[in-house]
Figure 1: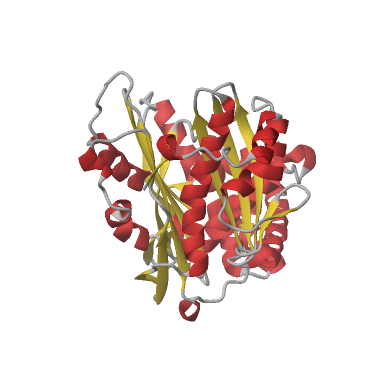
Figure 2 (figure 1 turned 60 degrees about the vertical axis):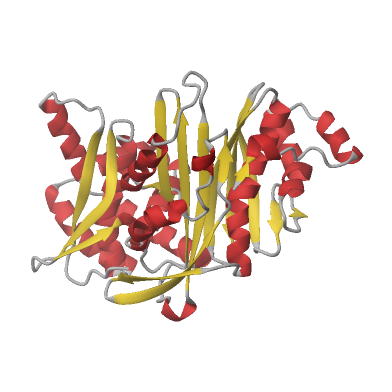
Length: 414
């Protein structure tokens, strides 16, 4: 376990490093980004790095790291790290904040948080250090995995009895819940964050950077038990990552794996959205999936676009009013109901990423905003929100525990 306040000062490196840091205006976003790219990040990583035009490349992980300075103030900084691993064919993201007496130290804390939590676990996964073996079941298949834990990074001070928790405490708390959320992924990363402030307790669990409210609740309950000490000034937080790699012998084929597969799926989704934009009547909508099957050549993806995309967009549209939990039910025409989690469904996760990209790129020009509005309007989430507002019910802490997806014959759970 590492305490960043007490153990981290990455700027104590030598004369050249100190001079470079002294020449940087740590309240200027562009200056901080240049510093991180040219020096700051490489200093805190335990990997050899190669500087490319706008990112660092880590040969040992076959991974690029792009850093975005999201916030930069006199005593606080927020850094976003956008990564892509060729080794695991996986995009990853982490956000780290630093708060200190000055901006320079805050940048150091944020970089250290990234290095000592996220990257320490990724290093363990890359080198196969101390794997924990687990087994999961999904869609009638058994999958075997190796789990790697990062260091547990603590900010602030706990009582000795609380600080003595082993690195495995969060894994033991959430292990069975996480196993139930594994599908047929190549690689999964889980973020744990717990914090206690004088008037707030925070618990967060993200699987592949998607929050899982039910597991966040469990983390918050643990943080509630921490002794607040000085009630007016107390702050303490924990952060940890789990990296979960599937054994090659149980990994099943998936048509859209890797960069090429992702790009192929993106083009197919655009094809579906063109068909969706052409819908002008209920009759058109009734024929939509059939047309999509013909043009996409993938029956499951056509039905996934029809069922998943409206709910994905609506969950985002109402994110400030509604929490959508991870549980789903796949309802087949013969009445069979298959329980699953969003995090298990490869198509769901990739569609969630791709629709954001497509909308942000304004791929449909002036029609892009109408496309988003129409997708939201076709969702069951939108119907729920309309009912709640019509009945003048309170929207505070509204939580949707489960989504139902009605699919046709030939839908493949993958």
